[in-house]
Structure formats: structure tokens, C-alpha cells
Image (cartoon, rainbow, N blue to C red; front, top):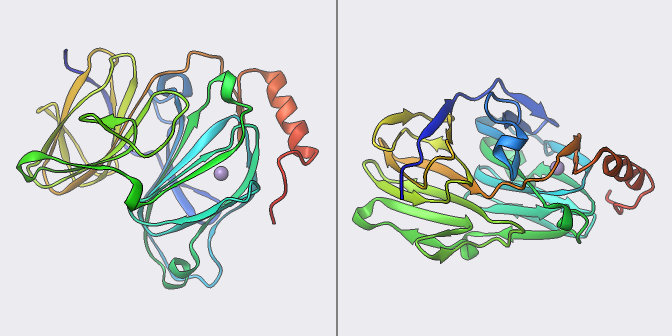
Length: 291
Ligand code: MN
């Protein structure tokens, strides 16, 4: 086993709005180093850094829109998000919870601030990841996994270092909550000041950290601060995170899908012809109906 060294520590790009409810920094694919191919299977990461939304009578968010060919994973750190889709699934996630939506063959959905949260307003902090699907699963049946606090396994670290919440993959042999089509590790390290956690993922997996809260030292050397993104080289397996103050770090590592990527807006396929087909199917109403 050898060390996974840091390739780059990346500051959040300037934010933009998705709909009127998500003020996001797009790390993947628009920041330097973070192309879809480089980060596969993670093909998009929008990060709504902590932002205070004022009270609103009408929930802010994104109206009905389609997806095909991948999964959207929304992780809530502050505030609450509601989801409705054309497969009849809906749910609300709050702090520490995750929506894992498999769009696959095609879905319409809408994503809004939850009604009560909208009325009171407050701090809002979220991550949305798009996880690509391999060609053989792109047209599989849509699926929804609402991961609540009750079903996300938690590993308690020794020495009161903190906890690891396992959304997907595994940590110290404990399996995560989500079903994934290809190997994906997605974990929240919640570390107390001075707490340290060690991780090991295959060198070939694309691996990164998002510093959601606090400041950390990686591999005992390099410091990363709140809202920064840490990209690892594909050169070794092991790395450590040490919290310089109470910290929350999103840890992501996944086996790359070595297939062509053809993308247009909300569709991610393998070829141009499949994109044309996706748009035709959407226009013909094959993604179902959602008000
Ligand atoms: Mn969406």
C-alpha cells in the first residue's frame, strides 16, 4: 500500500443559480482538472456552499425537467429539499440525508426547497452529484432511494475522532446505504477538532474531497479550507484527513467508467445518436408526466 498524493486543491468557482433555489459552484466539469472523463463516474458536482435564503412564501427551486443516462445524488447539509418525479416517487431530505435518484431510461423531476423551510428561510447547504451509468444500465428502469438518518450506517472512530457516515461503498468493512451500479464510495467524515481518519481506495479510482465545514490537513502536510475541493492523483491507495477544527468532509471515490461520454444538457449518453433519441423520446412524452 502506498500514499495517494494530492493532485490539486481547487477553490470554488464563481457561483451561479440553478433555477432560483440553488446557488451553486460547479466544480465538475467546469473547474480546472475536473473534466467528466477525469472524474468519472462523477460527471457533475454542483455545490451550494452555505447560503442564507430569506423567507419565501413560494418555494424556490427548479421546475420540471428531464434526465436520462445517469443518477442524481443530492446530499443535504443545511436546509431541506423536496423532490417529485414522473415515476411517482417523492421525498424530503434534511440535514445529513441523501436523495439517490436513478434517472436511467428517463424521468421528469422537480427539485424545490421544502415548504416549511421556505417559509422560515435560513442557511441552505447542499451537494448535487451526477453519477454516470455504464452503457448496459443507461436504459434501465428509473429508481429512487431516499436515504434517511436511520438507514445511513455510521462508523464511530476511535479516540473520539468523530464519525464516518457511509452513504455508499464501505468503510472499515461496514457497507453503505445506497445501491450503486458501479463501485462508488461516498462518505461524510464528521471529525472533531484534532480527530484523524484514514481511508484506502484503489489507486485507479478517481478520488476527491469536498471540505464542507472547517479546515483539514491532508496526508499530514497540505491544508484545505472550507469549500475547497481536493483532487487526488491515481498513484496510491491511502490518505489521511486531520481536522484542524470541527470539520465535515465529503469523501468520494469511484471506479472510472471507460466508455465514450456524449452529453447535452440533462442527457448523458455514449453517442450523439443516443442523444438525438433521448431528445425525441422526451419530446414524444416517453419520460412520463409531472405537473
Ligand atoms: Mn435535476
